[in-house]
Length: 142
Image 1 (cartoon, rainbow, N blue to C red):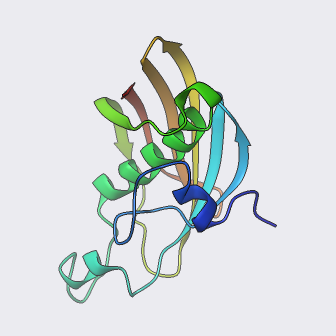
Image 2 (image 1 turned 90 degrees about the vertical axis):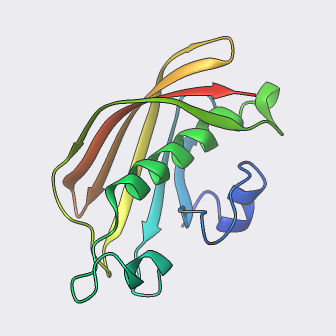
């Protein structure tokens, strides 16, 4: 059973379809970490052009999904409610495996540093326990 549904996620982050890339949040400690899921389907609009005949989820969208999980973690803190988390940097991004229709992405982002409106999240995306993307995401809350 999910901790947060898509509707509840939209109460925390400003993203909407087709750019909201989280289906559920499974674990959440406000200000510390979030674990979310994204069920990847053939109906995703980006598959029309990436790539015809061999659909692959763009790596930058996996990074964005990880950032959205981190945004749920940081924006669920009471003092950040109603604010927006913006990218400030993406560091050490590594892409290990493809994500294709039918995959269920598990998106884990842990806030490892926060000072004032700035912070850093350590993020990993997996499919069936296999690492597909890892990165360090810097954000600014405004």
